[in-house]
Amino acid sequence: MTETVKKPIKASEMEPSFKYEISKMHGGEKLMRCFQCGTCTSDCPVARFSDTYRPRQIIRMAQLGLKKRVLDSDTLWLCAACFTCTDRCPQDVEVASVIRVLRNLAVEQGHFPQVFKDQASCILESGYAYKIPELRLKKREGSGLPPLPKGNPESVCKTLRGVGFLKHIKKEGE
Ligand code: SF4
Ligand code: SF4
Image 1: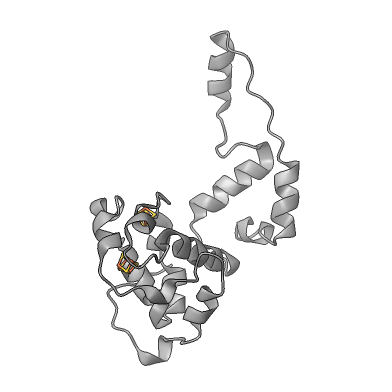
Image 2: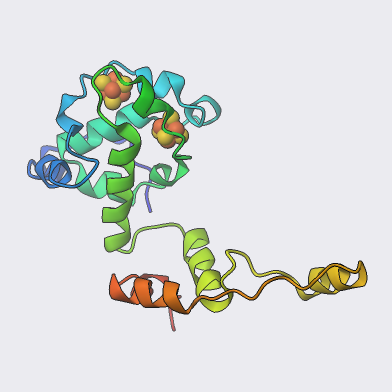
């Protein structure tokens, strides 16, 4: 993945149809209403602590058709999906939903952080998002706590296979 925002924009990297692609998807319909007021960024709790995460810029990149930049962007994955931006946008853009649409498109292209791939692998293996260390399980037992309920990953696996997600979480070389 590459850092996206500060590089000069070349006309050749703009895909005008990208905004229509997003606008056709559930949650992305109001993308073109954004008039770049910046309210989403100024109220975003993640932007407050990040030098690079700016929802307004993500929306603008999407409007301009900078498809590769926005889908390759690491910052896309910093959104905490708190929906503050959606609540505050004067144009009712549904910013958080547009970001979800962009993430879904990024995943379709196999562009998403390894940490999420690892989490998905854990869910598929055990039903838990994190592998719980054996030592911790023993400590639990030693403290007289009941065993953790068994995860049931089969139905998740079926769904993920159905939507073609499994191929994205195989590690390189597997
Ligand atoms: S608050 Fe809404 S209109 Fe303003 S920049 Fe963000 S998305 Fe655009
Ligand atoms: S939903 Fe994402 S972009 Fe919107 S305010 Fe929350 S963290 Fe920021």
